[in-house]
Amino acid sequence: MKKIDLKKLDISVYTETLKNGLEIYLVPFEDKKRYFITYATKYGSTTTEFMPDGSKTFEKVPNGVAHFLEHKMFEQESGEDPFEFFSKSGSYVNASTGFENTRYICSGTNNFEENLRYLLKFVNTPYFTDQNVEKEKGIIIEEVNMYKDDPESALDDLSRKAVFNKDNHRIDIGGEVEDVVSIKKEDLYLCYENFYTPKNMFVLIVGNIDVSNTLNILKEELENRENKYKELPKIKDVDEKYSVCKKRVIAKYNVEVPKISYNLKLKLEDLKIKDKFVLDCYLNIILKTLFGSTSLFNEKGFEKELFSDYYFDFDFIDKYAVINLVFETNKINELLESITNTLKNRKEILNEEDFNRAIKVSISNRIKSTCYIDSIVSSLYSDLINYDKIIDNKIEVLRKLKYSEVLDVSNRIDIDNNSIVCIVPKNYKDFELET
Image (cartoon, rainbow, N blue to C red; front, side, top):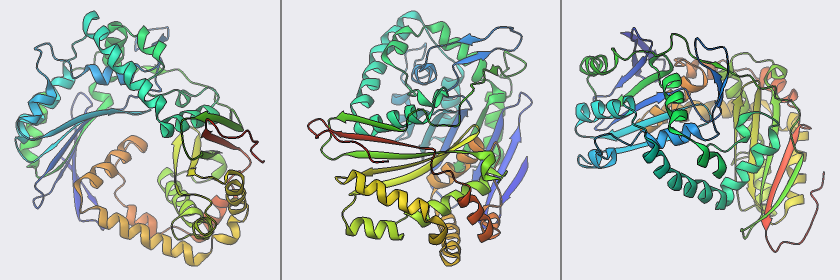
């Protein structure tokens, strides 16, 4: 096995790639009681049109298939319920589907080997029939409708549809009701056989484990798995325009306080930083300095009661970075004016002292996070999905960031390519968003 030391963090990652292409990442901690197992595929909801290896035509499956597939993986031909199996040992099991990935997780303090083998077994043995697929549709439709009734989910959905023109990130992970209704067992098997293949999957295990013994178990269970297709399928490209799809969206909803989402869509090439992790660090610093808990924006906003609660984040999506700021507010246009002024004056706000402080805080937080298994798992999993590798020198990268570069990245942010989405109470008086 290859050993990767996470510099300055006193963590070692043992990794090996099996002959079938499946990647293994093991992180042992003798001082921890828990273990956390992740079995994942780099396949999520955005992949709906692809050409299997050896084929000359693209296959189109309904939106929501990845999420439906995740649900059906818990259906066993034997009739045994995996949730009941893991609960017997007091262990936790779950799964989740994202835009670019699907993962199955198990965490506990007992029965490590038994739980590991069982998790791998049920993910590796799909069982789909016309009957059990039809039975699942009602459950998933209920889940889809539940998210539509949730204001935060609705705001997120409207925001993605406002930002993206054609990219599948504009589509809900679960799809629409009509998508769910149209899914067949053949769709599930087609996606499973193309994307739940060893060369598109990995295992990440963190916690109280023996590396040698764990590797032997994984080899026994996984080394003989075969890729049905020699190569991964070709994903159909989407020509996504740079400009946002909709500049302003107002929707009436069942909320007491209006919610707004302020979105910026940026071209990665315009930001001139090729290393995505470095760019991630710079954008984090910029956003925290402009809008973080110690920012002037935050201080004045609470003083003027411009918002009751808010958060911000960003994602790298293909050729773009999308920044998202979400607020609850009764003073919509006043808040938007404050956001706009903050963005326009970012050059003056981003001083070197705050930049250096932000780096120190970020380093401190990364060191503190190593005390918690869940944080370690989240960080490593994010690396594998976002960068296709473990970033082993994050502390060193942070220390080498330059004030001149953060200013350059900030200056290159196109604040005019924005989209503002607002959800207001159903009885809210009609108004216009100021531009």
